[in-house]
Image (cartoon, rainbow, N blue to C red; front, top):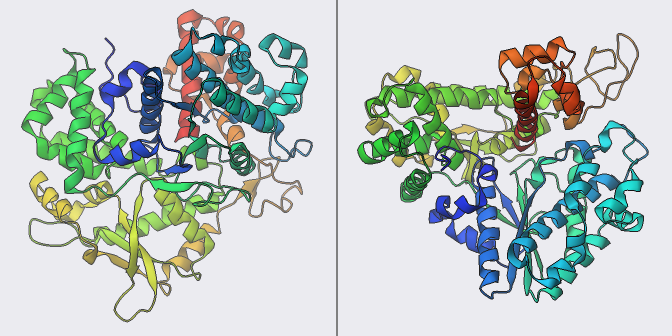
Length: 589
């Protein structure tokens, strides 16, 4: 049996393990809403459980349909979109037809798979249009169009996958998919077809996001419900989709509290059921569950209530043991694990999906975070009754520079700040602001002046977190102008010759050329092979034979890579897996 005890991402879990690992707990009301006729934006930063809940909802609805219920759920993901977007600056594809065809193909491919699982021997399924098309090949065809003219599709092979040219043109709009969804509902006598659209926020090319939500709204119809997973604060919905109106917002990622702790204990207990009986992970989880429940509560707080964050901390705790028996775990190992993961969180503060944003915005976010953390350092936790600052009241005034307001939203999307609610900015102020909880793990990391604080003292503080200890940042605070002034010194683009440019819409001061428009796909593909999770030996072999960037490896054929000495079939699979993982990490955060 495979050991999934510390598998971090729900989309990598096998279907048959979902029910075993699913923790309803505090998330049960949200899980129920995913089976209703509401159109929902399931909003939360990475790791809060969006994918787990969506996959579980689809699995349960499929089981219920087999028992006679008339609601079917279909789950699909959109994070692998990089090759469907024409390069920025392309003028001959304003409608992004192939991107819309790709979105539709992903939906219909998932629909076919779910119908196969539920109605595999049913003649209605075998005769259906969705069954007759090889959607996997359609998706593959669309995901390679970036290599040439994005409008160019090899129409000669469309017949081999079950599509006519007319069908394909319809796939670039919405009518083809809308008709199939309604046909499916009527053919199988379904009252409701629930489309669970995961990772929808990750196509953060501005054009792609607007097109995505416009397309989904076009699919709205009788007997259909759409549940769309999005990031808070940074998702762009375009002009045609109204946030909160066209879909109700359901938020994941509440501030951790004493009353929700049992859900996280249950999460770890369930992971034990699919772990190696002789494995180190199992021994460690059993040890902390049975002997150190306070450490688990501390880890939950320092993960800011994020389920994947908790598993990441436990995984790092296993690493900190350095091969020692898990029964030898000490509080010092816990402290080191938290500090290490928080440092990594800072290094990757902004989700991978927004790495193509203006460098000035990223710089502004870093400067603001450093100021926020300085406020915490000035009031460390001690062994006495001191009250460190945990909450920040940030004014909602329009006088805040747009760059700073946007940087705060990035912090929310990156699980650095958690919105708590409105706050009064002082007794004499007529102004209100939004109260934010700064990630508790950062406070733990930065509490350098407070000495070695015990787990019990930390829990005493976290259990009693209060908004009364928040720090105020009001409209007159000099921080806003300081951040904007410093961030504005950051070059925001580069020209075709690589010279830094302060203004991307102008001409380069050095050579007179224009800036290079770079979308997220270009940023990933142009990275050095160093970003791939491969051994130094394999990376060097790739470099020695001219495969210096992710793009070159991505575009190489299996034969070309297999011809590299000492690569071979086994290492070829490792290379392909590493490229896929890099793509997933970049776009899924």
